[in-house]
Image (cartoon, rainbow, N blue to C red):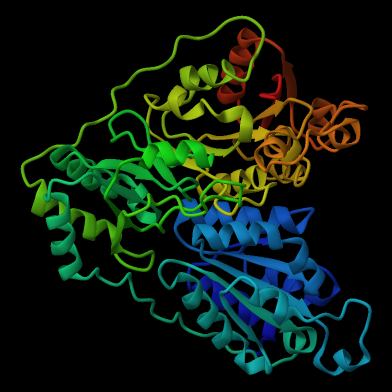
Length: 519
C-alpha cells in the first residue's frame, strides 16, 4: 500500500504508543489532518490556542508517563505554545512536537508565515530535526519518540515541510528502543550514607521521580532513621501526597521562608533535584538558597535512577526503620464569607480519593498544602517553569490521560485568562475536570513582588496594572459560553455545596469562587 509522509508519521507514532495528538493545525498540516481518518487508533484533541495544546501535552505526559504528540502551525504556532513548553521542559515531560512548515520549494519566497522554526524549538534544549524526504519521515518520527523518552524526558520537535508530508513513498518505522535511567554511582551512595551518620545537620531535597510513592517511602525511612530534614523541590512536576504517605514539606517560594527552612544545615543532599535557588533576584537577599558553608552532595541527578538510589541509601542507613506516614485527617468545613485562608479548608475537607490536582492557585493557595496534607491519596501537578497559564491546559491533558480519575484545577483568575479556552476543549471532550476559579480580581502576586524587589511604593498608575476590575470579569458567563456548567460561590458553604455537586456529576464544571486578595 502506498502511503504519504503524513500517514507514515501517524502510523509510526501509534506503533510506538503515541496515540493522542493535541492539535491546532493550519494549512501546512492539512495532510496530517486528512491522514487521521485513516488511522483510527490516533485520538486527535483540538485546542483553540497553541498554549492549550502544549500545556495539555505536558499534563498528559505527567500522568501517563509517556508522550503525546502536538500538531502546531509553523513558527508562530510553536511560538504561541512556547510558554507551556517551557513548563514542560522544566517538568521533564516527554512530548513529540510536530511542526508543519512551508513546502521546501516555497521557503525561498519568504512568505508571511516564514520563520526560523529551528531557532524557536532550539530554545527548549531538546531534540530538533527537519524531515527532508518523504521516505525518511517514519524513521525521523521514531527517533523523535525515542528522544522524547530519553531519561528524564525532553521535548522532541519534528519539523514537517508540507511537500514532504503530502509526497508518496512514506515508510512506517518500528519503535526505537529507549534505555531506562542510568544507575546512580554506588560510591556516591556510600559517601552520602557516611554524611547522614556523621552527626552534622543534614537536609535531603527530592525531586522528579523521587516525589512518587517508592521514592517518598525511601526518603521517609532515611529521614526517620537519621533525623535529616526532608524537603521536596518548590514546584515538582508530580507529587504524590496524602494519607498513608510521608508528608514532605516543599521548599518555599519566598526566599526569606526558604532561608529559614534550610537554616543551620551543614550538608544538603539532592536526589532528582537541583540545589535550590530563588525565583528572582531581590535586593539584599541570596540567589542561592544553600546556606553559606553547607556542602552539596548529589545522590542522583534527574537522568539517573533516583528511586533506586534512595532505596539503596535507605538500606544502608535505615535498614530497620519505617517512615513516618501522614495520618488521615481533614479540616473541619469552614463557614462564612470566603477568604484566602478558608477556601483551602473546603478543598481539604472534600478532595476525593485519587484526585489529580492541577495547582495554579498562586497567592491564594499559600495554605493549601496544610489543608490537604491528610486528605485521601492524590497527585499534585505544579507550575514547574513559572510561566503562568498552565493550570487549565495541564488539567485537560491529565484528564485525557486518566479518564477514571477526578481532576481538580485550582486556578487563579489572572493566570486563567492566558489559556481559558481550555474550558472549550474540556467541554468538547467531556472531561471530568472541576475548576475552582479563585477570583480576587487582581494580579495579587505582582502586588507582593512590587514590595519585595525594593521598588518605590506604587501609585495609582502602578496599581492599575495589577487590577482586574473595571470591568469585573464574569467567569461564569465565559465558562457557560464555552459549554461548561458554572456557578459562583461567595461563602464557604456555597463553595462546599457547589464543589461537592461538581465532583458528583460527570463532565467539566467551573466554580467562580470570590476570594479577597492576600494584598
